[in-house]
Amino acid sequence: MTYEAVIGLEVHVQLKTRSKMFTRAAAGYGHPENTLTDPVVLALPGTLPVMNKDALDKIIKAGLLLGCEIAPVCKWDRKNYFYPDSPKNYQISQYDQPICKGGSVEIELPGPARNIMGEHKSVALTRIHLEEDVGKLNHGDGASLVDFNRAGTPLMEIVSEPVIRSADEAFAYLTALKTVMIYGGISDCDMEKGQLRCDANISIRPVGQAALGTKVELKNLNSFSFVRDGIAHEIRRQTAVLESGGKIVQETRDYDGQTGTSQSLRSKEMAHDYRYFPDPDLMPVEVDQRWKDSIRATCPELPFDRQRRLQAEYGIPYTITSVLVPDRDLGDYFEEAARLSGKAQAAGNWITNDLLRELGAAKKSLSESKVKPVHVAGLVKLVEEGTILSNAAKEVFVDMFNTGDLPEAVVARRGLKAETNLEDLERWCAEAIAANPKSVADYKGGKESALNAFKGPVMRQAKGKADPKRVDETLRRLLAG
Amino acid sequence: MPKPEDFNLDHVANLARINLTEEEKARFASQLGDVLTYIAQLNEVNVEGVEPTAHAFPVVNVWAEDVPEAGLSVEDALRNAPEKRDNMFVVPKVVE
Image (cartoon, rainbow over all chains, first blue to last red; front, side, top):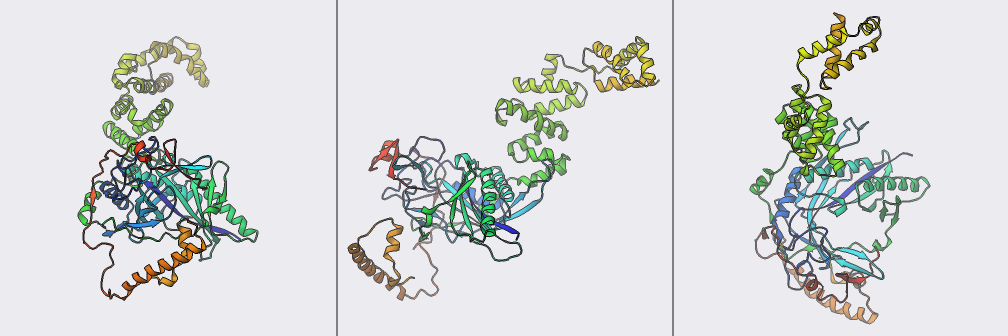
């Protein structure tokens, strides 16, 4: 029997705010333990929560970018559970009135090859709601240690419909979601810093069956590739269970990316009875048209829209846009270089090949690059005008990368100007031919390689600054005459 | 609204992670039953046409701008902790 997988993802994304969701203690990652707390974070008696306006702006922005309906009114609920990562013994969340409903994420599936665009699909969302993050537990000898730095950080939960069909689709979904969040300045989505976390609900069913199979929740998917590998593993596991006549048990499983195995989380078998009720400490949020419009005005072009525009507007291929677009800053960099040089393809080549290679080798970020769009544009122009040859241009690029000098300055300093005096070239070629009658005879007798005998003397005359292609053409023309 | 007789003390104790003796269970069941019966009087109120709300006042959008303020020092944060280690709160081992 052939089975198909049905996958829904719950993605938690920390919002990039300076302070916490319901208090003004600083939010952040990598600080010494318990240095980002205040009485509200620690739930000391008598404290009251106050919403963070920027967190609301950011989730509305996320909702608008993903085409969600923004609820005109939403409220806050308490999700009650006893666990030491939550000092209040409840988490403030949104239960039946999330701020964003519906929406979708455009994804790109892997293409037949790296340089060929894959199929695009739309993954429907159920909802996005806002809540607060919990503290971090460190398990030590005979005790657990709690750090509340993360507690209270604004956290979005983005819930997809169960419409994802494979591990690759889940990976593509996360990638697309992350790119949109970064474009919107909503979150940095660094999984290593816990800024994006993903749980997957996975079931399988015989192809053609309408009813869903028993679902298993997979947790601890703490990198993009672990999400893909974990889901692929779970689909294989469920298929093996069903094929051997077994039954899938509804459970939560923990995926270990290091070993590629999963195990049931038996301790979580306790009833999920969160006894949600409206939080009396917080007033509802009312989002009117004006507020939405003001956020919409700050929404950037969506990544895939930008990719389509770059390909249409500049005529550059997928191989370049697929590198430029996922990184908003790199895309901006390219558009400026393309505008300044008027040669998008050449600018795109320099950026995606040489700039990224040099940045990678130097372990530098784009913002640290001494080569700015104006440098790239200048270099493109010098090559285009024939002022320098492509070999020299490579040298100029590396020099600019190290010194930050403009290309014209590097060319002058290093004496890289190409020999463009065509009369000189013509004369050197004629001289080389006149000086070597044997090779002329060989060439005319059909020996193609005899041409090389003339090139050495010409390049020597040109001090290496002649365009080899042009030398070749000139020699052939003169010999044919 | 659930009826007082639906109240399950064992379930609530389990969620609250507390162990109760038989004697405590009998005492709390009776006390909580009284509380629930008292509250259940609200069921007699006619709320036809009344919008459910958690608040008595129609106030919305109470917020603060996202400007961090000084929080607690680690020493102050941990001051009331029954046990601390490495600047963290020590709790009974939680097996994940």
